[in-house]
Image 1 (cartoon, rainbow, N blue to C red):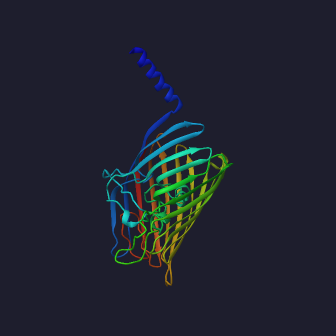
Image 2: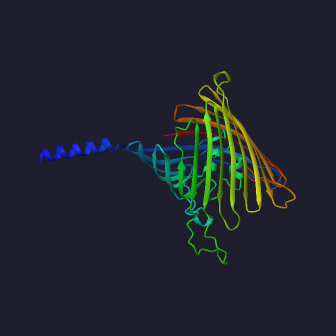
Image 3: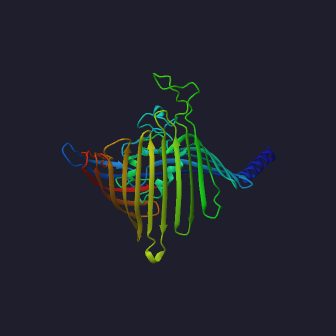
Length: 368
């Protein structure tokens, strides 16, 4: 019996050596006190405890198994958190409004993928970021945070936060180029809406079998301090396709200019008969254990045959002070200006058309 147990232990150890694996629990918990206000008759202000002011709060599990021969298999399950209230975010099952989940539930809405990687690159299956979102996330000085400094183009755009495929797509097949291409990188994606061949719009005979189908691609180059990428995506809808194209660029100077990083993004999109354009410029400047960051964004809607084109501009400046590699405190102030009938406001506030909205937030972020 003893010899049998020793043999079993040896076999188990040999198997582990051939296929080493690891699983990691990770996340972010971010909370902030936020004050925002609007202007004009009928405007409103609000004080609230928010979440995700610096980085979106999340909880996730990821793991990788070494398959040998340069191959590896991985999984990634990540959910968004609203830690100010202990609730979560719903996912979307079919890249259409009909697939939206119940608000407040916890789901692996941020990412849910299994993948195979090797010298050929990486293939991912599941719910993942669409290629065009990466430029918005990477080339905005405020990153992927949801605070008052966050990207105005993304939060108010046709293809941004509220669009089913503005950030992620479900039922996707993605491919990423390998990392050894001399600074070149890229991604392509195809995602399915999963309507059957007889599907029609409710109350009509109009076929919508292709609704929710998404195709996208992103290609870039990074070398030294330069990083530039172009991305595009299209989601099909009978009511009018959603198309997003953006170009992002950043340059990080050396220590002689205090490692200053300049960022920019050009953005063009359309949904049905409405077009839109946006531009963002910004910078990040390391200061001791912290960082100053600022951005200016301008976004304009262009409805067909419209007399006026609603336009919104946003200026934001913030400071992040790192208490450690995982913990930081931060503060941000921001102001939105509207014209031509636009009435965008910072989170929680209500402002009148052609008026402004301003606010401030102070928060703490911990990563694990």
